[in-house]
Image (spheres, rainbow, N blue to C red):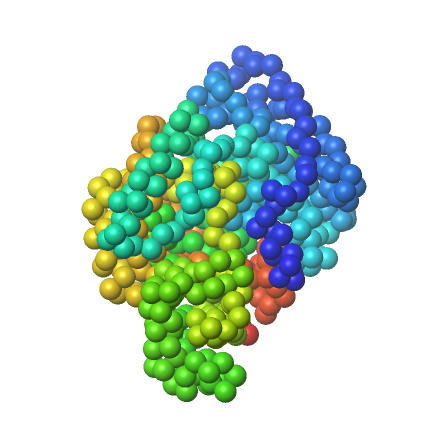
Length: 488
């Protein structure tokens, strides 16, 4: 898929989709034995999602319980979409999809993912998209956060730590005030239960699945809760389930050091083009001199001046060695009085995406988040010493330190033999190769295909790549590679 399409996948809330009513069957006597039976029997009404979208793109609403421990209580709506399989004769079943996040809407994925999937796959599967609970058009939560509060990572500094702590507490307090009765139920386990209820409503015995980024964790949790109902699962750019979730934030920032080192080597080989230094050590020194200079005098860019911390905050970009070299060279020129450098990517996501993301991060594993702010201070200092580029960005205090801990469930320990195909770029800045290896260990019936020179977050969604044939073969035949592979 072209990069432009990938950007659309991460901004699906821009699409206009109509949510449609459904009818729940009256509670019958058997409901006492199976309290979910009335949900499974609901009648769906499919209609065209949007006049601006293809006619084959249909939407409906599925009603699910807010609290699966009390299914007779409050309900919420899930927005669900589909594009039917291209061949009724070749049809295998349904392929549910999740774009990542958490907090990413997935309703438009049946349309957006079609270019990334082979014709053979599109012939065999109904492509099913959905906005996870609390997201997009599925009973969305909103905490009313300011732009500053919508930023996910903040660098540690002693002079700003009190401000960081106050910001984190403000986010938690606002979310508690806006949706305190809903927050305990916005978890990955409940989203996996929603997926299984969608399966039942669609009349399917099993589901296949494509998940990207956070969606790999969601898929893995589904295989743990419903192993007998998991068919063909493709996990693109995988999270290590054992690190959910504070460990993911910290590990991603720490692993950036390897990508940064690779970048210094690449830029040194092209000193004539970028002027950053003829050796990796010289490139590294040029970068840190730029950071120190920007801390003294912020560097002008197309979106305002940036200090050294703002430059470090772009650590994920060093996997894209050419783009990173051009940007650092432009910043150095701007710092020396030249034209303003290009703006860095925007850091703040929409309120709904951020509100839903913290609900999942904090609610999935509440015990993994320290309550004492001083623990975050100590960890930020320790991680920064070990990983100077971004260690503190992954370890600094976040809203989970103050998140309400009512209800909830223990973290899901993913450890099963369900077959799945994991595809992973070697140079992924967000879910690193080490994290994908952790997913591979947790799903010991899986196979993994690593794209040796692959850069960026996403294999299938940013394709084409050398992993495509393995994905197509698995989805169309159910056959995994005989062993883990490296290609490219």
